[in-house]
Length: 217
Image 1 (spheres, one colour):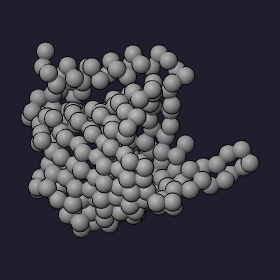
Image 2 (cartoon, helix red, strand yellow):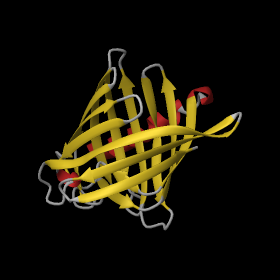
Image 3 (tube, rainbow, N blue to C red):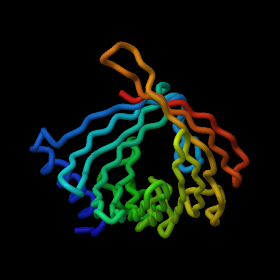
């Protein structure tokens, strides 16, 4: 069986098997004014549901995005392990509905498999990500990279990221994601508050500026 097809099936199995312990499951959904990921806008207003199973340092789940106008769809699977000294390792399977799910060929493959490495030390964070495969349907070149550094202050966070491959128009390495974000709780009743987040994002490579607001449910 093709190696990438085996990885896709394994990712589905992890999420399915771990889902039996409902008490460790968390379901959430965000509503965003626009879907901007690593400095690139993929869609306008969108709903982004997610489900995550957690057991100690291990977590696995699924995350998706659906544009309100129906023009962009995404359905990802992920698994990761966070160590108690700040290091985390993970794998993400990016899939975009409209392509054939079990197509893992280079020419028209539907999945992008990315290794994720992160490290957090108090308010400082670093991440490094590497795309394992070339897939025409997912628009990955294989070897695509993305690095990001962030620092959280009391009332806001700063971040800066750079990448290559599907992160830039020409595939060359460039700074693509620089910005500031903040969040607050909007009190609705004495027992219910609504998390609200906002980000100002500049992509120096494409010279695009984005302002994004998000509500978490």
